[in-house]
Image (cartoon, rainbow, N blue to C red):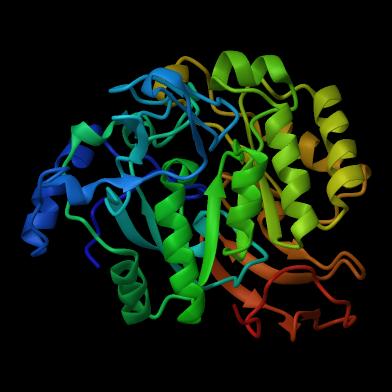
Length: 386
């Protein structure tokens, strides 16, 4: 599978990195060079794919039920995400089968730390997002529309076949927001499971209850970006709301699906220690102590380029608060060689996974248990099967 984008950022980053808009718009040329000639977005009516989770209304309008926005879309219109369109009273996905970014990544880049550490994932995304985060690292993908680029149609079976050829352990739906290509992701995940390949979703968690319940039946792990524990932050910075994300977290936990959380700490906006403590208590009460929480360092990006990088001391304070409140696995990301990027046994305190950036240095575990005290460590480890 060709590398459509060469994502680069800070060497210690534990999140998916941004691409330049020039590279994004040049992707068609890369595809051509790789022997995958671009084709028009819609070559024929057969290219249209009917969306899931919508209701037909009067006057050929439709209401999309995929996410909490619940967009009412007139004929010829699109939802907030820009990739679901009402054509003649039927809602269609404009991005099914049309990934704009495909790449092989270490799973630690997502970041997943308790999901097959040291393994690789075939990562993919289409354009579009149902949020508009002012700090978005991948805004060139998330805030672009289908008309910005034309790519070759790739069936779900083709994605799974390429993943198998590459020998990856999982397929990751990432970079942009996977909820907007729900149908494509869901079909790939179902086929991948039959092929013995796991599926991991990297998402903002802004799903309707019906959509997240359906998705969880076909995937194996999900990482949710919890943007803040303040609804005004969600509304002013992300164009969304907090409550549906918290509902999504509870729904995921109820399924038994493997879950990790990332909190991008933005200086002066979502770094209040009192709020962090309130969030930590909510997480323990509603999700339990074993869901890993990653505090990620912010770097100036997109529409928040005026702010400085997060002080490391702020990240360490958040780490300390979460540990005090009973969260057993707390990490710090985007900070070079920080002790808190390693995994320590919750029982004996010994280091059981040593990391440096995306690289695994050592794993002191056997059969999912601490090598030192034999305690079971929550997560999905090498012996697991889809």
